[in-house]
Length: 180
Length: 274
Image 1 (cartoon, each protein chain N blue to C red):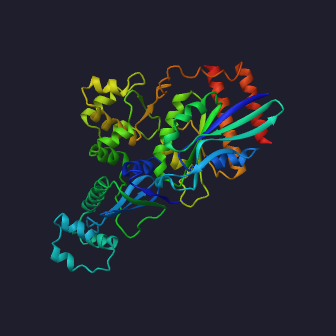
Image 2: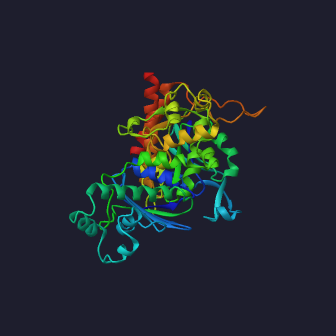
Image 3: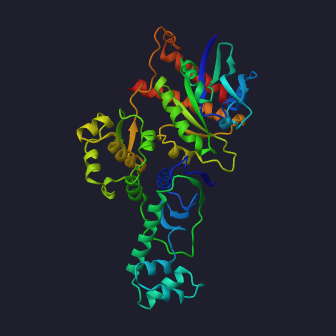
C-alpha cells in the first residue's frame, strides 16, 4: 500500500477544514477547539493541530489530505505537515481582503519548505463580496504560471477540480524537470 | 462582482495597481474617516476623480485657475452639467479645448494625489459604472506614472518593510507587453537601480552598489513592483527555517523513481476524472 500526501493551507477561517471534509471518504479527523481570542471569533471553533482526510484510490494507493492550523500561533506545525508532500493548496477566502497579506506570507513560507508544485484556491466564490480569481492573482502577486482557481469549499466538483489542477501542475513540473 | 474592502488591508497603491493591471472599467468609491472620494477608470486608465476636500466641478476648476471670479461663478445656473457648461464656454471662445483638457487632467491628478494620503476607510469598486455627466480626462491618464509618483511620496517605512521584508531577493523585468520603461517617468536614482536589475543581483547588492539605504531601495523597488515593471524572484529555499539541533531526520523520499511518481500522479488524475 502506497500513501501520498497533499497539504491544504491558508489563513484562519479560509475554508480548509470544509475543503477536506467535502472530498474525504472518512469523517475528517479534526482537532478543533473553542476560539479563545476575540479577534479570531469569526467562527466558533478552529483547527489547532490539523485536519486529516483520506481518499482511497485503489487497493494500492491512498491519498491523505492534511489541513494546517490557520492561526499564526500554531505555525510551528506547518513544516512538520509539509514533509514529503506531493503538492500543496493555498486556500484564500476571496471575500476577505484583510486576509490576503497573510495568505501571501503563508504561501512564501510553504514555498520555502520544499520546491513543490502548488495552486491557489480562490474560495467562497459563491459570496457576493468575493474577489474574482483574476483580481486575487494581482492582489496576491501570483505569477501567471501558477493557477488561481475558483472554489467553493463545500462544492465537491469544484474541490475535485482544484485537486486535479494541482495534479496537472505536478506533471507539468516533472516534464519541465525532465526536459531540463 | 464589486471589489470591497478596507484601505487598512489593501492600500490605495495596491488598488490602483489592480485596476491598472486588470484594465478595469468602473468607479472606485472611498469612504475615509475624514473624507470621501471617487475615481473612475476606463480600461485601467484614469478618467475622472473627485473628493469632498477639493471642488472638482468645472466651475470650481475655472475659479481655481483664475478664468472666472467667485462672484461670476455664482451667476452660472446650477442646473447646467459640466459637459453642457464646457461646450458653451468652448463655443463662445471663452476657453480653448486644450485649456479645458489640461484643467481637467490637472484636477483629476490633484484628487488622486490626495488619495495616497488615505490609509484607512472602506472602498468599493463598481464595475462598468462611469459618471456620464462629468468631464473626463482626455486622453485617459495612464496609472503606472501616477502609481510611481504616489509611491514616491509614501513615507511609511514600516509598511515598506512589511511589503519587502527581505532584501536578499532578486528582480527581473516583467514580460507584460504594455510595461515599457520608456513610457514611465523615472528619477535618476530609479534609473540607477534599473541598470542593475538582473537575476544575479540581489536587491541588497543593488542598494550597496548605489550607496542607498534599505529604506531608499525599498521605496524604489516597491514603486516598480506596484507599477508592474519588475517582479521578485524568490531564491530557492530562502525562507526555510533554521534546523533545530537534534531535531528530526530528513523525511524519507516519497518515491523511488520519477516514473513511480508519474504513475501515482496519473492514477490520481484518472481517479478524480471518473
